[in-house]
Image 1 (cartoon, rainbow, N blue to C red):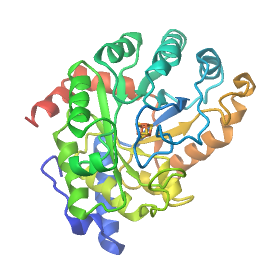
Image 2: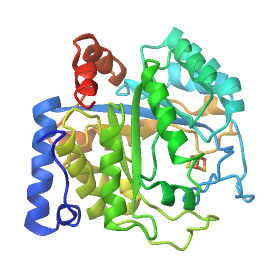
Image 3: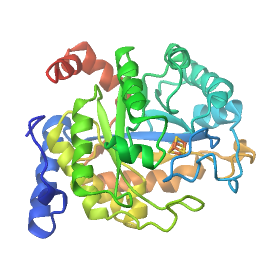
Length: 344
Ligand code: SF4
């Protein structure tokens, strides 16, 4: 299977033995490309201010009930330099679309992490100006995570996803064109999404210059216009992940933490059985305004143990190479460029 693979509606809704075969094929494609290695990435959320207003997100600007805050870069640096879980090779710095946090928190934090740790650095900060994204790259980040969210431009506008669909695509193209390794993603199960809408996501993903893609199940958020919507089906989400893997065996596909919300206690492990090769560990202190220095490594032992035992239970291994270094190695041997070039 390869870029020529095009999922069918029947595959996206597969169940029982057909679903088992689909997931097994995806897992095999992953092992053929990546072996048993699974990347382990820590995530820190540094600001929940957001200038956007996506209907599916509790951080939207119209949510007046959310207490907004930005992290202190020095406190987060102390946490990440001295107390991070040993298995983490990369860190993703995440925020709502908040250029103030980029300047005041993210840039100083990246500079410290670059100086003091070998961590690969990803950012997930929304659509920023070219100058600001260039500053992030110069500071030492190398992976930009920016979902295209919804493949249908009309639905994109209807749900007030960030900016416009066209601008989002242009931002992704600009980031990739300026040397970032870009990972994108889309949401499955939004209210009113048709099968045709859902299939369109694969065409959009296929057309983008990206090195990874996520599939996120819709989870209704409090204080949003979609608060009464239905949580996406875990099975359908996993079928999408499997289809994505068969379409692009070379992409890094995460088992997103929302899988566990869509299917308590099992979603994450099933993601690893369905072609995911990246797991994330949220390191954001429970109360960002608390004294972070009290968060020692012990704070994460249970989470880390759970993640490592899930990886081991699936017969897989945590990668000791960072995702950032993996992408560098792929670029150095021409793999990344070749695959982009073959799409045009
Ligand atoms: S841009 Fe991101 S953080 Fe902001 S409302 Fe949309 S999904 Fe939420």
